[in-house]
Image (cartoon, rainbow, N blue to C red; front, side, top):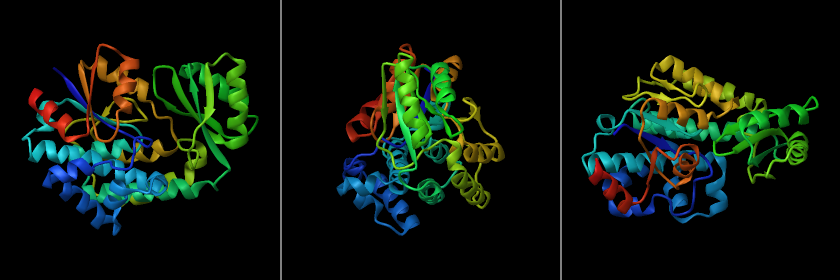
Length: 313
């Protein structure tokens, strides 16, 4: 069996994330402590107890999701003796999840990943004043139709495709007025559902350029090694291993389209037969079911799930 590891992105966070892992395994507690220390913040307390409004803030959600994924990885390695690199072929992460994937594959330290994601969240939030940008989900639309919708709706304002999630789900992002026009255009073109998303900034569009510049500067100061397994880039939708290329792509990713559907199709073409989603929630496993039913999706985030999955390896 050829296996790929998937790491969730924003939207998968929930109060209580990682708590059962921390209660059951010292390896998980060590990860959460490492992240808390790196950020000089009790992020783990916020993850376990909330409030949800604070956890949902981009600057908290991003490192929190990475921390939960890395807790799963460390428990698999230290408590169950799983060598992820030996048992898999590729890793991939959705947006911020790409940092989790790089961390899991030994390319980034946990402390550096936490600090980079904190900065990434803060920079994305600061890039556009609250209320000026928006994102919307087009359900029942493939990428080519979504691209027609945003082209028609732009009228000189920024609006573009942000996430091609697969299974007829495309997220668009940009200036609020342009996104609202795009919703009306989408409905006129017969898109099943088009709705605004409860997000605080328009991610993955040209309005995020200030955040991309901040990440370019921060990544320039960080040691990034070659990952143990190729990590699929959101920008190229194929496996990448060169540290310099990966850094450039992480910068481009801030303003670019998350090519998730194409990434999963690429993994299938490489012979991937199972994708294991390591971390909070089950979003990516659900998307895989819609993209290709032949690939087995497994969600591994809770102690029982981890134990059951480790026995199959």
